[in-house]
Amino acid sequence: MDWGMKNRLSQVMPGGRCFFMAMDHGYFQGPTTGLEKPGETIKPLLPYVDALFCTRGALRSAIDPLNSKPIILRVSGCTSMVGKDLADEEVTTSVEEIIRLNASAVGVSVFIGSDYEKQTLKNLSQLVNACETYGIPVMAVTAVGKELEKREARYLALCCRIAAELGARAVKTYWCEKDFDKVVQGCPVPVVIAGGPKCETELEVLEFVHDGIQKGAVGINLGRNVWQNPNPVAMAKALRAIVHESASVKKAYEIFNEGKQKLESHAGRQVLQ
Ligand code: 5RP
Image 1 (spheres, rainbow, N blue to C red):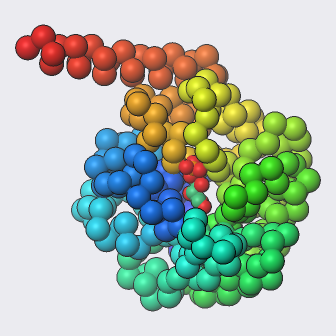
Image 2 (image 1 turned 60 degrees about the horizontal axis):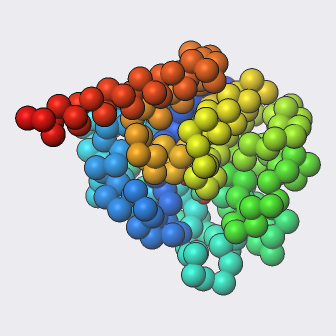
């Protein structure tokens, strides 16, 4: 692997592990709850994450270039929640733009099994062609659009393997309860766990992340389960402990509760004053 590629990968995956903060939701679903002002939402979480996953628009308008984290630029889009088909994506950004924004990596969705399978796989392949020239890693996102029921091991394994074969340096995919280890084992490049809709409880999030890491994933790319939580910093601390310190679910939940209590006692003091 060339020096530049290795260096960029190590920026976003220090020590081979990663906590990516997903904040790209606006590119297809507009001002998502909790991310109406992305800069304000993300700022307190920055110390706990390894990289931000966002579009060029959010980056320019909401992220301070002086005190940022490495950027994974979301470079596919051109569809919306209210349009005909979320899978009908194109690549939105040129390689010059990726370099100008000093992105450490890029992310592109593939919609395997959809009407746009070939188009989105071509998006991935052509992006790999362009980015490899400059040592920029491409992360494939195995997307399912609104068809959340597709998230089972056989399908996810197929998607991850295809994305890796086409040249992705990492693949982001959903965790699944059964056989997630087979998804990881069938993929020759690092697998990053995607978030998905907000879970009912914090414990549920910590459990699926812990299980995914145990089964070989190198890290997480989570959004709503962090910044839609009433205690996002406590959640980020707990997740970081699982990813980077191999914390158990019990330990991570303690970290979450400690963080939450600190915030509550701080708020209590403010009310008393
Ligand atoms: C959307 C994405 C998001 O980055 C991904 O879904 C993670 O965010 P969340 O944890 O909120 O689902 O790739 O296509």
